[in-house]
Length: 297
Image (cartoon, rainbow, N blue to C red; front, side, top):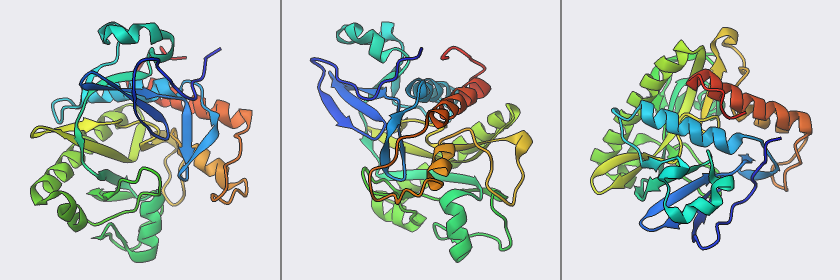
C-alpha cells in the first residue's frame, strides 16, 4: 500500500518555506522542493491526503521540463536520489520520486495563465463582462468552447489569499514592459507546444498556469508545469462544449466539494474514501497517458 506524506521534516536541513502542497528546503546555494500528498481547494488545504499525488506532480513536471527545455529552460537540476547531495541520502524513503533539486531564482510575482478554452474563472468573467483579464472575447460562446487562439490571462500570485485575474497592463506595471512581453510570448509558446503533444495522446489542455524566475538575466520556468494541480486536462473523446467537462485534474475535488454544503469560510470537510481513491486514480491516469509510464502505482 502506498505511503502518503502529509508533511516533511528533514533533520539538519533548514526549511525555506512551506506552501499549500510543497515544503521547500534550503541546501547550500540550492533549493529542494518536496511535493507532499496534500491537496488544496478554494484556498484551503484539505484534511485528506491523496496517494501518489506528490510523486505525480514531481515526475510529470520533470517530464514537461525536459520536453519544453528548448523553448524555455527551467530551474531543475536533479530528481534522482543518486544526483542529490550526500546530506539528503538518509531521507530516501521520503524523497524518492517526490523531490526536485533546483536553482534559486528571483521569482516573478505573476501567475502566467494561458487559456485555450472557456472554463473556470475565465468562463465566469466572460459571462459577466465579455472579457477575460481585459481581453475582449467574441460574443455567443458556450462554456468549454475552444477560443479562436490561446490567450494570456495573468493573475496575481497570492501565497494565502485567492489569485485575481489582472490585465496585461498591470503586469507591465509590475515587472516592466520588456519582461512582461517576454513572459507572455514564452507562456503562449509553451502552451501551444504542450497542447499539440497532449492532443496526440487524447488529452485537451484547456488552460494552464506557469511561474517564472530570473537567474541573472536568464528566464527560467519554476515550480511545476502541466500538472493536474496547475492545468485542466479533458479527455478528447468525451469533449462536448456547452457544459463543464469530465476532467483528469483537481477539478474533480472542487466539483465534489461544491456538493457538500461547505461554506468555504470554515475548515473543509474530510474527503470520503471513494473520492480520495478516484482522485488518486485520475492523477495516475493523466501521468500514464501523457508520459507513457506506469511506474508510480
